[in-house]
Length: 460
Image 1 (tube, helix red, strand yellow):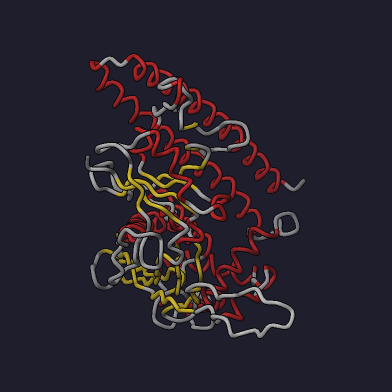
Image 2: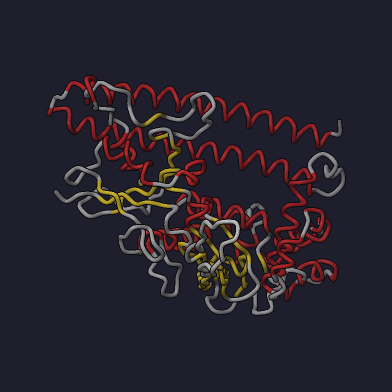
């Protein structure tokens, strides 16, 4: 085995072992906290109220920490494999072709979108092998040089040529696909909607989605009876516009000149922290004005177009076990295979001590929340059998708040991306700092109103 391959294999082995050690330790800690929390809750001692609240918060934090640790560890493994596939000399394309080819293809699609070439036939007819791996590799290397020096100081003709392939006609350069994924990872840590919803890449400023406004009619007839005309199903159109979100972090020229600085990581973290939170929050609470329209922005209704059904929590300023148990039955059966909960971390902490209190076993039944790391569940925790995703933008439990959502989010919500992330390097406006003006165009809206339900906290 070549030496560089051996190094990668050793690194992957170490990271996998670290994943096992981290998850086992956190799992054991979670189980201890959960048992102590349940013991205090069953004791019913009012003096333990503060301790129960503290344990609940601690348990919620550990659930979130476990998810983040697993994401970070897996990202390091993926990065090691990607670098092996894209490194010059001794390339591992035969062993790991899909990783590098997928990034090259994603970059190509972003470039097509930036130039208005991402028509419907282009998007759906591309194949994995259509990506230019060599060209993408060269662009990644040129991108890092661009971040440090700017295109005007690049004297190598080949480097400049490679950089030009990712230029955006409206200004700036496309961020490499791998780095864009890192920025999106930061978005997921803030709010998971970008990973749960359907995402479309388009080449114009909006997308028009056909909408089934109802069904046609039919009837029974005899063999020789006249067949009168029946009603025709109506088709409408929903338009989702794209909106622009930007970030403009800055760094000193000395920092950029420091060869030990990982510029890719720096700009991904800075831009992700800004654009990520703004985008993710808009998918939940945005009003549709200069930003996506959020899941919680629609009025209560039956789930007909323009309304989302709101189910009461059955408890004054709290969530009851009966409300959780009955909630999934409000969702139509076709949406159940991909259904999941979305709620705030603190809310999940309060749900961790809820028990099945029906029948003769009132207050002694099984807990509604099941921690992750059980056989067959991976890292996902479940609530009455359905996975739970944490979203900090969901409202806290309070009278009238929409603190929980349940449904098939891939069916319910659509995110539209007009353009990959682009960056313009500006060394002039804020001397001695260099500013990095990054922008992306994104839209989002609910497209299937019956595929998701919201829990509203009762006031009395």
